Length: 98
Length: 318
Image 1: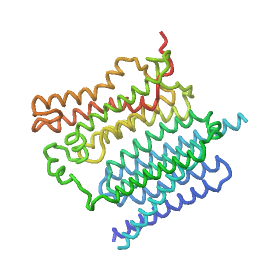
Image 2 (image 1 turned 180 degrees about the vertical axis):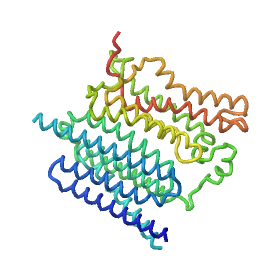
Image 3 (image 1 turned 90 degrees about the horizontal axis):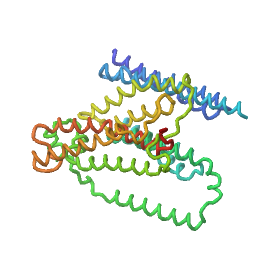
Image 4 (image 1 turned 90 degrees about the vertical axis):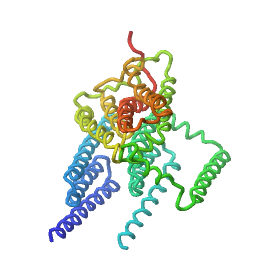
Protein backbone atom coordinates (compact mmCIF):
# COMPACT_ATOMS: atom_id res chain seq x y z
CA UNK A 1 0.00 0.00 0.00
CA UNK A 2 2.69 2.46 1.01
CA UNK A 3 4.49 1.45 -2.19
CA UNK A 4 1.54 2.59 -4.27
CA UNK A 5 1.31 5.84 -2.32
CA UNK A 6 5.01 6.57 -2.88
CA UNK A 7 4.66 5.89 -6.61
CA UNK A 8 1.61 8.15 -6.71
CA UNK A 9 3.64 10.88 -4.97
CA UNK A 10 6.41 10.48 -7.57
CA UNK A 11 3.99 10.73 -10.48
CA UNK A 12 2.23 13.78 -9.03
CA UNK A 13 5.40 15.67 -8.06
CA UNK A 14 7.32 14.95 -11.27
CA UNK A 15 4.27 15.91 -13.37
CA UNK A 16 3.96 19.18 -11.46
CA UNK A 17 7.69 19.76 -12.02
CA UNK A 18 7.33 19.13 -15.74
CA UNK A 19 4.41 21.60 -15.78
CA UNK A 20 6.63 24.32 -14.32
CA UNK A 21 9.36 23.52 -16.85
CA UNK A 22 6.83 23.83 -19.68
CA UNK A 23 5.46 27.09 -18.28
CA UNK A 24 8.99 28.44 -17.85
CA UNK A 25 9.92 27.52 -21.41
CA UNK A 26 6.75 29.13 -22.71
CA UNK A 27 7.61 32.30 -20.79
CA UNK A 28 11.16 32.22 -22.12
CA UNK A 29 9.82 32.09 -25.66
CA UNK A 30 6.91 34.51 -25.31
CA UNK A 31 7.87 37.20 -22.78
CA UNK A 32 8.86 40.56 -24.30
CA UNK A 33 12.22 41.43 -22.67
CA UNK A 34 15.24 39.86 -20.99
CA UNK A 35 14.23 40.59 -17.40
CA UNK A 36 10.77 39.03 -17.67
CA UNK A 37 12.26 36.08 -19.57
CA UNK A 38 14.75 35.59 -16.72
CA UNK A 39 11.83 35.67 -14.29
CA UNK A 40 10.13 32.86 -16.22
CA UNK A 41 13.33 30.84 -16.40
CA UNK A 42 14.01 30.91 -12.66
CA UNK A 43 10.56 29.45 -11.97
CA UNK A 44 11.44 26.46 -14.14
CA UNK A 45 14.81 26.01 -12.44
CA UNK A 46 13.72 26.41 -8.85
CA UNK A 47 10.22 24.94 -8.72
CA UNK A 48 10.39 22.59 -11.73
CA UNK A 49 13.63 20.87 -10.82
CA UNK A 50 12.76 21.01 -7.12
CA UNK A 51 9.50 19.15 -7.65
CA UNK A 52 11.18 16.60 -9.94
CA UNK A 53 13.85 15.97 -7.28
CA UNK A 54 11.28 15.73 -4.46
CA UNK A 55 9.25 13.33 -6.57
CA UNK A 56 12.25 11.11 -7.31
CA UNK A 57 13.46 10.94 -3.67
CA UNK A 58 11.27 7.96 -2.64
CA UNK A 59 12.50 6.03 -5.70
CA UNK A 60 16.12 6.11 -4.45
CA UNK A 61 17.44 3.05 -2.67
CA UNK A 62 20.03 4.67 -0.42
CA UNK A 63 20.33 7.77 1.70
CA UNK A 64 23.50 8.81 -0.16
CA UNK A 65 21.66 8.75 -3.50
CA UNK A 66 18.94 10.97 -1.98
CA UNK A 67 21.56 13.38 -0.66
CA UNK A 68 23.22 13.52 -4.10
CA UNK A 69 19.87 14.39 -5.71
CA UNK A 70 19.29 17.16 -3.15
CA UNK A 71 22.84 18.45 -3.72
CA UNK A 72 22.20 18.62 -7.47
CA UNK A 73 19.08 20.66 -6.82
CA UNK A 74 20.97 23.02 -4.48
CA UNK A 75 23.80 23.46 -7.01
CA UNK A 76 21.37 24.23 -9.83
CA UNK A 77 19.49 26.66 -7.55
CA UNK A 78 22.75 28.41 -6.72
CA UNK A 79 24.10 28.61 -10.27
CA UNK A 80 20.68 29.69 -11.55
CA UNK A 81 20.54 32.52 -9.01
CA UNK A 82 24.09 33.65 -9.82
CA UNK A 83 23.62 33.53 -13.60
CA UNK A 84 20.25 35.29 -13.31
CA UNK A 85 21.83 38.13 -11.32
CA UNK A 86 24.72 38.44 -13.77
CA UNK A 87 22.45 38.53 -16.82
CA UNK A 88 20.20 41.12 -15.20
CA UNK A 89 23.26 43.19 -14.29
CA UNK A 90 24.50 43.04 -17.89
CA UNK A 91 21.08 44.15 -19.16
CA UNK A 92 21.02 47.12 -16.76
CA UNK A 93 24.55 48.16 -17.69
CA UNK A 94 23.64 48.10 -21.36
CA UNK A 95 20.52 50.20 -20.69
CA UNK A 96 22.54 52.74 -18.74
CA UNK A 97 25.09 52.94 -21.55
CA UNK A 98 22.55 53.56 -24.28
CA UNK B 1 6.17 -3.61 -23.82
CA UNK B 2 4.73 -0.23 -22.97
CA UNK B 3 7.91 1.06 -21.32
CA UNK B 4 9.88 -0.20 -24.32
CA UNK B 5 7.80 1.97 -26.63
CA UNK B 6 8.36 4.97 -24.35
CA UNK B 7 12.12 4.31 -24.28
CA UNK B 8 12.19 4.00 -28.07
CA UNK B 9 10.27 7.26 -28.44
CA UNK B 10 12.65 9.00 -26.05
CA UNK B 11 15.70 7.73 -27.96
CA UNK B 12 14.18 8.83 -31.23
CA UNK B 13 13.41 12.30 -29.84
CA UNK B 14 16.96 12.58 -28.49
CA UNK B 15 18.47 11.59 -31.84
CA UNK B 16 16.22 14.07 -33.65
CA UNK B 17 17.20 16.89 -31.26
CA UNK B 18 20.90 16.03 -31.66
CA UNK B 19 20.66 16.11 -35.45
CA UNK B 20 18.71 19.38 -35.37
CA UNK B 21 21.21 21.05 -33.04
CA UNK B 22 24.16 19.80 -35.11
CA UNK B 23 22.54 21.19 -38.25
CA UNK B 24 21.83 24.53 -36.58
CA UNK B 25 25.42 24.80 -35.28
CA UNK B 26 26.71 24.23 -38.81
CA UNK B 27 24.27 26.47 -40.66
CA UNK B 28 23.96 29.51 -38.42
CA UNK B 29 26.02 32.53 -39.43
CA UNK B 30 26.54 33.79 -35.88
CA UNK B 31 29.61 32.44 -34.12
CA UNK B 32 28.11 32.82 -30.65
CA UNK B 33 24.86 31.04 -31.58
CA UNK B 34 26.85 28.22 -33.18
CA UNK B 35 29.02 27.80 -30.08
CA UNK B 36 26.06 27.83 -27.70
CA UNK B 37 24.18 25.24 -29.74
CA UNK B 38 27.38 23.15 -29.78
CA UNK B 39 27.44 23.27 -25.97
CA UNK B 40 23.79 22.23 -25.74
CA UNK B 41 24.64 19.50 -28.25
CA UNK B 42 27.35 18.29 -25.83
CA UNK B 43 24.84 18.17 -22.96
CA UNK B 44 22.33 16.18 -25.01
CA UNK B 45 25.12 13.87 -26.19
CA UNK B 46 25.84 13.24 -22.51
CA UNK B 47 22.24 12.12 -22.11
CA UNK B 48 22.59 9.87 -25.16
CA UNK B 49 25.70 8.20 -23.72
CA UNK B 50 23.98 7.78 -20.37
CA UNK B 51 21.05 6.07 -22.11
CA UNK B 52 23.56 3.73 -23.83
CA UNK B 53 24.93 2.87 -20.34
CA UNK B 54 28.28 4.44 -21.25
CA UNK B 55 28.44 6.42 -18.01
CA UNK B 56 32.21 6.97 -18.19
CA UNK B 57 31.87 8.38 -21.68
CA UNK B 58 28.88 10.45 -20.57
CA UNK B 59 30.88 12.01 -17.74
CA UNK B 60 33.80 12.75 -20.06
CA UNK B 61 31.49 14.26 -22.67
CA UNK B 62 29.83 16.49 -20.06
CA UNK B 63 33.14 17.62 -18.59
CA UNK B 64 35.41 17.86 -21.64
CA UNK B 65 33.18 17.78 -24.73
CA UNK B 66 30.48 20.14 -23.45
CA UNK B 67 32.15 22.12 -20.68
CA UNK B 68 35.83 22.51 -21.50
CA UNK B 69 35.58 22.65 -25.29
CA UNK B 70 32.52 24.87 -24.96
CA UNK B 71 34.46 27.37 -22.83
CA UNK B 72 37.36 27.28 -25.31
CA UNK B 73 35.06 27.97 -28.28
CA UNK B 74 33.14 30.63 -26.33
CA UNK B 75 36.31 32.63 -25.66
CA UNK B 76 37.29 32.21 -29.33
CA UNK B 77 33.88 33.47 -30.49
CA UNK B 78 34.05 36.50 -28.18
CA UNK B 79 37.56 37.27 -29.41
CA UNK B 80 36.41 37.07 -33.04
CA UNK B 81 33.44 39.37 -32.44
CA UNK B 82 35.01 42.62 -33.74
CA UNK B 83 35.96 40.99 -37.05
CA UNK B 84 32.84 38.85 -37.47
CA UNK B 85 30.96 41.35 -39.62
CA UNK B 86 33.79 41.92 -42.09
CA UNK B 87 34.30 38.16 -42.31
CA UNK B 88 30.62 37.72 -43.24
CA UNK B 89 31.03 40.15 -46.12
CA UNK B 90 33.95 38.18 -47.54
CA UNK B 91 32.21 34.85 -47.91
CA UNK B 92 34.09 32.35 -50.07
CA UNK B 93 32.79 31.81 -53.61
CA UNK B 94 29.78 29.55 -54.13
CA UNK B 95 31.93 26.98 -55.93
CA UNK B 96 34.37 26.82 -53.01
CA UNK B 97 31.51 26.37 -50.58
CA UNK B 98 29.93 23.67 -52.71
CA UNK B 99 33.27 21.84 -52.84
CA UNK B 100 33.64 22.05 -49.05
CA UNK B 101 30.10 20.78 -48.57
CA UNK B 102 30.77 17.91 -50.98
CA UNK B 103 33.97 16.93 -49.16
CA UNK B 104 32.34 17.08 -45.72
CA UNK B 105 29.33 15.06 -46.90
CA UNK B 106 31.60 12.44 -48.45
CA UNK B 107 33.57 12.03 -45.23
CA UNK B 108 30.33 11.76 -43.19
CA UNK B 109 28.88 9.26 -45.65
CA UNK B 110 32.06 7.13 -45.57
CA UNK B 111 31.98 7.18 -41.76
CA UNK B 112 28.31 6.20 -41.70
CA UNK B 113 28.90 3.38 -44.19
CA UNK B 114 31.85 1.98 -42.24
CA UNK B 115 29.89 2.08 -38.97
CA UNK B 116 26.92 0.35 -40.59
CA UNK B 117 29.24 -2.20 -42.22
CA UNK B 118 30.60 -3.39 -38.86
CA UNK B 119 29.73 -7.05 -38.23
CA UNK B 120 26.95 -7.58 -35.72
CA UNK B 121 27.73 -8.24 -32.90
CA UNK B 122 30.71 -5.89 -33.20
CA UNK B 123 34.13 -7.46 -32.57
CA UNK B 124 34.97 -6.89 -28.92
CA UNK B 125 37.74 -7.45 -26.42
CA UNK B 126 35.33 -6.91 -23.53
CA UNK B 127 35.28 -10.60 -22.38
CA UNK B 128 39.10 -10.63 -22.18
CA UNK B 129 39.05 -7.36 -20.21
CA UNK B 130 36.53 -8.75 -17.73
CA UNK B 131 38.53 -11.99 -17.45
CA UNK B 132 41.81 -10.21 -16.59
CA UNK B 133 40.31 -7.31 -14.62
CA UNK B 134 40.82 -8.97 -11.18
CA UNK B 135 44.60 -8.92 -11.82
CA UNK B 136 44.50 -5.09 -11.88
CA UNK B 137 42.60 -4.96 -8.54
CA UNK B 138 40.33 -2.15 -9.81
CA UNK B 139 36.60 -2.64 -10.15
CA UNK B 140 35.83 -0.25 -13.03
CA UNK B 141 36.74 -1.95 -16.34
CA UNK B 142 37.23 1.47 -18.01
CA UNK B 143 39.91 2.41 -15.46
CA UNK B 144 41.42 -1.05 -15.92
CA UNK B 145 41.68 -0.52 -19.68
CA UNK B 146 42.97 3.06 -19.40
CA UNK B 147 45.62 2.43 -16.77
CA UNK B 148 46.58 -1.22 -17.14
CA UNK B 149 45.77 -2.77 -20.52
CA UNK B 150 46.23 0.41 -22.56
CA UNK B 151 48.34 2.45 -20.15
CA UNK B 152 50.63 3.51 -23.00
CA UNK B 153 47.74 5.33 -24.70
CA UNK B 154 46.88 7.16 -21.49
CA UNK B 155 50.50 8.18 -20.98
CA UNK B 156 50.69 9.55 -24.51
CA UNK B 157 47.37 11.35 -23.97
CA UNK B 158 48.77 13.17 -20.95
CA UNK B 159 51.92 14.05 -22.91
CA UNK B 160 49.86 15.32 -25.86
CA UNK B 161 47.99 17.70 -23.52
CA UNK B 162 51.32 18.99 -22.23
CA UNK B 163 52.56 19.51 -25.80
CA UNK B 164 49.30 21.26 -26.72
CA UNK B 165 49.82 23.68 -23.83
CA UNK B 166 53.37 24.37 -25.05
CA UNK B 167 51.86 25.07 -28.47
CA UNK B 168 49.43 27.59 -26.93
CA UNK B 169 52.20 29.24 -24.94
CA UNK B 170 54.38 29.54 -28.03
CA UNK B 171 51.80 31.99 -29.43
CA UNK B 172 52.85 34.53 -26.80
CA UNK B 173 54.45 37.78 -27.90
CA UNK B 174 58.18 37.96 -27.12
CA UNK B 175 57.61 40.68 -24.52
CA UNK B 176 55.00 38.60 -22.69
CA UNK B 177 57.01 35.36 -22.61
CA UNK B 178 57.19 34.02 -19.08
CA UNK B 179 54.32 36.30 -18.04
CA UNK B 180 50.80 35.70 -16.81
CA UNK B 181 48.17 34.21 -19.14
CA UNK B 182 44.75 35.78 -19.56
CA UNK B 183 43.54 39.29 -18.91
CA UNK B 184 43.17 39.96 -15.21
CA UNK B 185 39.57 41.11 -14.94
CA UNK B 186 38.74 44.02 -12.71
CA UNK B 187 35.62 42.59 -11.12
CA UNK B 188 33.68 43.90 -8.18
CA UNK B 189 35.12 42.14 -5.12
CA UNK B 190 31.65 42.22 -3.53
CA UNK B 191 29.82 41.26 -6.74
CA UNK B 192 27.77 38.16 -7.29
CA UNK B 193 30.54 36.44 -9.31
CA UNK B 194 33.08 36.90 -6.55
CA UNK B 195 30.50 35.55 -4.12
CA UNK B 196 30.03 32.45 -6.29
CA UNK B 197 33.80 32.06 -6.60
CA UNK B 198 34.07 32.02 -2.82
CA UNK B 199 31.17 29.66 -2.16
CA UNK B 200 31.37 27.14 -5.01
CA UNK B 201 35.03 25.93 -5.03
CA UNK B 202 34.88 24.10 -1.67
CA UNK B 203 31.89 22.11 -2.96
CA UNK B 204 33.51 21.66 -6.39
CA UNK B 205 36.79 20.44 -4.92
CA UNK B 206 34.97 17.77 -2.91
CA UNK B 207 32.93 16.70 -5.96
CA UNK B 208 36.06 16.64 -8.19
CA UNK B 209 37.96 14.61 -5.60
CA UNK B 210 34.99 12.26 -5.20
CA UNK B 211 34.69 11.67 -8.96
CA UNK B 212 38.45 11.10 -9.13
CA UNK B 213 38.49 8.66 -6.21
CA UNK B 214 35.39 6.68 -7.18
CA UNK B 215 36.89 6.10 -10.66
CA UNK B 216 38.66 2.98 -9.42
CA UNK B 217 35.42 1.06 -9.02
CA UNK B 218 32.65 3.17 -10.60
CA UNK B 219 32.32 5.58 -13.52
CA UNK B 220 34.62 8.56 -12.98
CA UNK B 221 38.34 9.16 -12.93
CA UNK B 222 41.16 11.64 -13.13
CA UNK B 223 40.16 13.39 -16.38
CA UNK B 224 36.62 14.17 -15.23
CA UNK B 225 37.80 15.06 -11.72
CA UNK B 226 40.59 17.29 -13.07
CA UNK B 227 38.12 19.12 -15.33
CA UNK B 228 35.90 19.98 -12.37
CA UNK B 229 38.91 21.14 -10.33
CA UNK B 230 40.13 23.22 -13.30
CA UNK B 231 36.66 24.78 -13.61
CA UNK B 232 36.79 25.82 -9.95
CA UNK B 233 40.22 27.38 -10.50
CA UNK B 234 38.98 29.25 -13.58
CA UNK B 235 36.00 30.56 -11.59
CA UNK B 236 38.39 32.05 -9.03
CA UNK B 237 40.52 33.57 -11.83
CA UNK B 238 37.58 34.96 -13.83
CA UNK B 239 36.00 36.53 -10.75
CA UNK B 240 39.24 38.40 -10.14
CA UNK B 241 39.88 36.93 -6.69
CA UNK B 242 43.29 35.50 -7.65
CA UNK B 243 45.58 36.22 -10.59
CA UNK B 244 47.05 33.51 -12.78
CA UNK B 245 50.62 32.42 -12.04
CA UNK B 246 53.37 33.53 -14.46
CA UNK B 247 54.29 30.66 -16.76
CA UNK B 248 57.96 31.09 -15.85
CA UNK B 249 57.10 29.92 -12.32
CA UNK B 250 59.26 26.91 -11.43
CA UNK B 251 56.69 25.39 -9.08
CA UNK B 252 53.95 25.70 -11.72
CA UNK B 253 56.09 23.88 -14.28
CA UNK B 254 57.04 21.28 -11.67
CA UNK B 255 53.42 20.45 -10.89
CA UNK B 256 52.62 20.31 -14.62
CA UNK B 257 55.21 17.63 -15.39
CA UNK B 258 54.81 15.74 -12.08
CA UNK B 259 52.05 13.45 -13.37
CA UNK B 260 53.69 12.44 -16.66
CA UNK B 261 57.07 11.98 -14.94
CA UNK B 262 55.65 9.68 -12.27
CA UNK B 263 53.76 7.80 -14.99
CA UNK B 264 57.04 7.27 -16.88
CA UNK B 265 58.83 6.32 -13.64
CA UNK B 266 56.17 3.70 -12.87
CA UNK B 267 56.59 2.44 -16.44
CA UNK B 268 60.34 2.17 -15.96
CA UNK B 269 59.80 0.26 -12.71
CA UNK B 270 57.78 -2.17 -14.80
CA UNK B 271 60.73 -2.68 -17.14
CA UNK B 272 62.95 -3.49 -14.15
CA UNK B 273 60.65 -5.69 -12.07
CA UNK B 274 57.85 -7.02 -14.29
CA UNK B 275 59.48 -7.67 -17.64
CA UNK B 276 58.46 -4.70 -19.78
CA UNK B 277 57.59 -0.99 -19.82
CA UNK B 278 54.37 -0.09 -17.94
CA UNK B 279 53.87 -3.65 -16.69
CA UNK B 280 52.80 -3.72 -13.03
CA UNK B 281 54.50 -6.16 -10.64
CA UNK B 282 52.11 -8.88 -9.40
CA UNK B 283 50.03 -7.70 -6.46
CA UNK B 284 51.06 -4.05 -6.76
CA UNK B 285 48.80 -3.10 -9.70
CA UNK B 286 46.22 -1.15 -7.68
CA UNK B 287 48.90 0.72 -5.73
CA UNK B 288 50.69 1.72 -8.96
CA UNK B 289 47.45 2.74 -10.68
CA UNK B 290 46.39 4.91 -7.74
CA UNK B 291 49.88 6.47 -7.59
CA UNK B 292 49.76 7.34 -11.31
CA UNK B 293 46.20 8.72 -11.09
CA UNK B 294 46.99 10.75 -7.96
CA UNK B 295 50.07 12.28 -9.61
CA UNK B 296 48.18 12.99 -12.84
CA UNK B 297 45.31 14.80 -11.07
CA UNK B 298 47.13 18.09 -10.21
CA UNK B 299 49.05 18.05 -13.50
CA UNK B 300 45.89 17.60 -15.56
CA UNK B 301 44.02 20.23 -13.52
CA UNK B 302 46.75 22.80 -14.22
CA UNK B 303 47.20 21.83 -17.88
CA UNK B 304 43.46 21.92 -18.65
CA UNK B 305 43.01 25.24 -16.82
CA UNK B 306 46.02 26.85 -18.49
CA UNK B 307 44.91 25.58 -21.92
CA UNK B 308 41.69 27.55 -21.45
CA UNK B 309 43.46 30.66 -20.15
CA UNK B 310 45.55 30.86 -23.33
CA UNK B 311 48.93 32.32 -24.12
CA UNK B 312 50.68 34.63 -21.63
CA UNK B 313 49.75 38.28 -22.24
CA UNK B 314 51.23 40.33 -19.43
CA UNK B 315 54.98 40.35 -18.76
CA UNK B 316 56.08 39.87 -15.17
CA UNK B 317 57.10 43.18 -13.72
CA UNK B 318 60.79 43.05 -12.89
